Amino acid sequence: MYREWFYLTQSVWNNTFSYDNRKNKKLYIPSLINWSIDDIKLWDQVVFEDYDFDDKLSSCYGLKNFYKIPWDWKDIYLFDNHNHAYYFWYLARAQWIIWDNNTLIHIDEHADTRDWGEYLLKPDSCDLKKVFQFTNFTLNVGNYIIPAQKEGIIADIIQVRNETNLKDYMDLRLDLAWDIVLNLDLDFFQPDLDFIDFNLKKKVVLDAAKKAKIITVATSPFFINQELAIEVFRGIFEWK
Image (cartoon, rainbow, N blue to C red):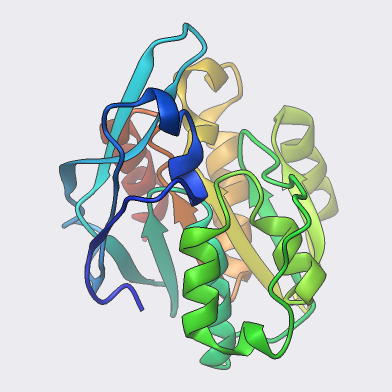
């Protein structure tokens, strides 16, 4: 899946936000490529569009592609809108990188745990075509975690959303025997959260990343400037 880019034109998924009030009715979904951390490119296609808190239409541009990036003997999947993480978790399961009952470390400004009551359960979750359709035509940026938990690929969820969560994480330090998925949203580094120490955030991200079997990272165009998001991403993961 994600072999070719396409436009989402129906009022589904992230395209439902303010759909009836927007002139633009389509969102760009990039293709997935293998790439290095140095060659990430932005693009001039709208990938998310909604009215912001000032009631102004925000047309958000994102990545030219989704990127599979090798890092510390594992893969990072970098993409724009966060619900794409759902697909990449199931891809990792299909490749025997993870199985069920993983602990999700969710580092994000938002919880992403709205429950709209729509789930893809076994055996449908073993069909990557159905997972792809569910990811791109049903889920959105705020409701993709609970379906994964209901199906069983995710068991426990550790939410890291503020300074207290960061310090609690560093105090607890996870058992290395746990099967861990790191799910990072780069909006945790947007300027409104600069009162939280950057080095503490980076330390927690890297600790979780080194323990995780797979890493999913969203650039979240609606919530953080994309040039800044890429700068932060490189600043964290070029640690070696």
